[in-house]
Image (cartoon, rainbow, N blue to C red; front, side, top):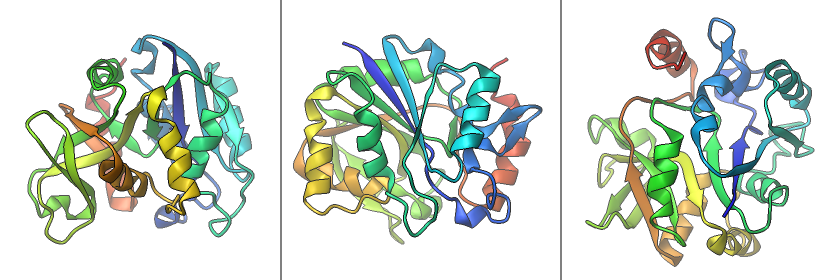
Length: 250
């Protein structure tokens, strides 16, 4: 079975203004000539079975992503979702549905947020996730404390790894297991995406879909080793600029 990779990059990153007023977050400098997107996909070539990689952006930044793709000669399809403002954005789940239509109908999906940087192997995550097919798998990361997990979606799990609850940004999170924007969606459950949207589900952030999916079906979590950075605001961006060089592949 083939695999379509979806890179979600259609947000407007208002919390990073003015850095992202005229540049997408994923194309902010990381180190040397690298940008954040280069770090996100650094282990993607190691993933077996990838047939198509689609990056979904908005009309405002599409030209910049095309320029990046041409400079890197990256085998990535750039998809413009047609929006130009924060107010008209489609949301991550509608963008995911657009990208899914560009892949092969029977492909599994590996979905990556382009504001997550992580130091582990995507091939390892895919291998683990495929054991849970036909059910979805979410990448997880261990926060240092429950206090530090309050800014993220967190999960609780059974011993089998099945997620029993997903809680978004709770002041009293039930665990330290942070859910990342790293997902594996086997082809057999793709209808759940359209069902979520058709039922009026909030398309803005993937966490809304994952919470709904956990209540509808089996979803598994895989704890991934090593560093992870969520680039949401200026302080986290400055941190990753300082620390990422020791994690980057050369």
